[in-house]
Image (tube, rainbow, N blue to C red; front, side):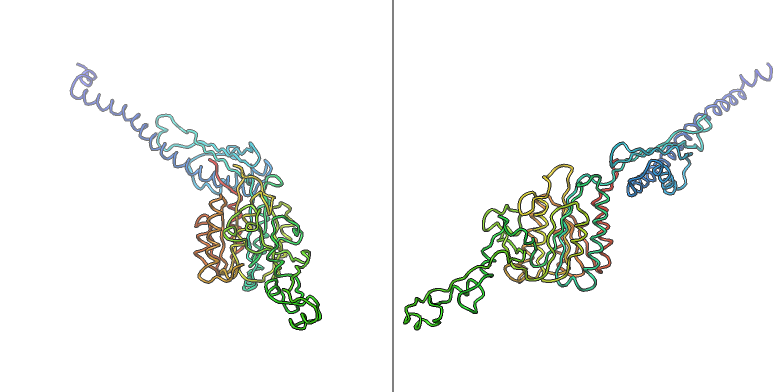
Length: 448
């Protein structure tokens, strides 16, 4: 038998056959194992690509609007800077950025993963990719700014910083609007009162009984309110000032008469509605639900209803000046009124799936005074808490900001979510807080 015959048929041959077969089988085994390893590595690379693409989408959204050329060049630069080291070959042309609709960006990236092991079975590369969508700007938004204008806002540079932060917020919201009117803002300066303005003197939603009882003239000198006046007596013959001389000279001794002042002398402020309407958005159709006109006891900037006339909004912010005591309830209540369609302000849109309504409530102090007195026993705090609960139950989302002082628990609980409460320890922090809120309201988010 030849040497080859002995090799194939003898013990040596059988051993050699096994070795050859094992060697031949080892190739696909190594290839399969390598493919599994490379597949795992490719997935890891794809995850890195996805994270970098998500970051690129968000970064571009903040820069929008951009031209296609700007999207392509800046998109690639941001993507590369975010990517880090991967085993994927890509070119700038592999990043596709499209704008299929207003306010939307779609990013797709593809490349070739270079395997480390599976090349032994002829796999030299295979494709990997990632996709991201991002919306930029917002659909429709109505925001009410209830801003403390009390005297304590004059300290620690608080009013100056509040104005600066408010201007920045308005700029952010204006830029985020896709179309004029998509974003509207109301401004509610408040202290113990709010000021609706004398232009509403004939509004049906005002009640005048309180104002008229405090503003007028008595036909007996020295009495300056209706109650004090009508408890006095006068002679129907004015020159007699005692009952005896009056009656001895043919006069009658009668109750003094109070004559309300002309409503055109009203200075434009209102105070809390009767409880529990002070913490609700009840339609003002009865004495208890209408808004009591009151003479302004301190200076105060007027309320500005919802508008997208941005220059007017900025002007109103500049008009704010610190004065008076704190009544957080009335500021929150009027912010709520500004976001609904019925009186006293009718500029708000009807609720809709593509419309969000937010209140931003800022104060720097504890409640101190309302229509019924001081905060003894937390009476005003209870009104504020009720207004917060009712507004949130009605579907409004509330941000609260405490500036150095104020009832932290009250404001924290008033916020829709703990993350929507900000405790500012220095007025200089207000700009960052308003920027953060503005960014959230601009609703930059990955949709996929």
